[in-house]
Length: 337
Image (cartoon, rainbow, N blue to C red; front, side, top):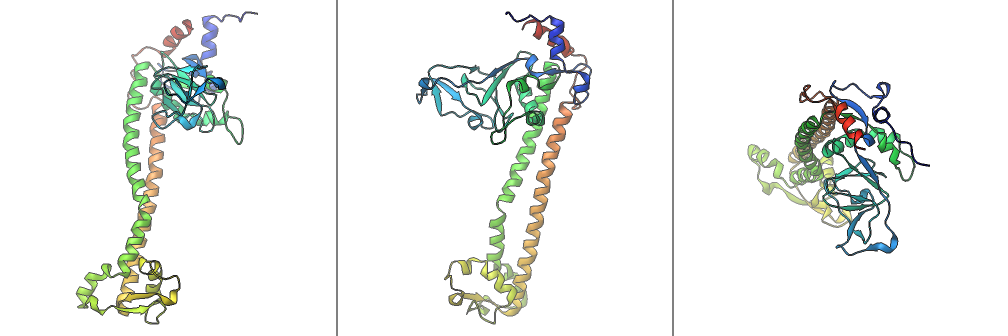
């Protein structure tokens, strides 16, 4: 039996999100629509096993999220005959595990069951990518499975999206990419600081027990580095606090595992106490730096979320209310389907 053809009014009714289901208010020249109504969603399907090949002159296959990098696609499999295909410029979307992760296709790909593709004439693909990143809660709330989390095609089809005019979509993407790029760079710098934490802590301890951190102290006191002498690690002449730092330093770790056999260079008792105090203070400052960095990283994520939230509410200050109401654009799109 032939499928009943919907009227334009029925298509519009199916495409628009009822007011009671709209997550938040959007500007008057925007509308809330279903993702599937503003473009085509191509669900993946594995190619035939006998068509599989390692020959990279054939069609590359995207099996799942493992092939989706941050901004590129890396494949290891190819097929002689494609089943479902994404075109250049389509948005390839993960449907399993890391749901909603997406990359813009740089060429034609065969789509496996772990992914889908989205293409549209009235929605900017980069805007769609930003949407998926910001509306992941919807995807996960509608996912199934435990060991392997996945979403069905109808979940993507029915996903509610705030739809601004096409030019506003592009302006939003421009602001988001610029702002998020700056925040990401700041985050990378902070991650670099955190990654060097253990190296800096070891440098502080080693710099203390080898006398580098107290060179100025000795100069003030009129004491020479020659005042240091070699003693066994378990010597009673080694202050307890200084001994603790010695045991964590390269001076000890590079020697015998038997502590009774370890010989170390030791300063006078006052300098040992000074070294222990300096190490404690520097490590305390290092811990403060770590805490501050972690707080800033958390703030960066909060700022990014705030910018995204404002963007999809039309609160970036970029919306032009004189641009055509997107419902009219949606009607044209539906009329052509």
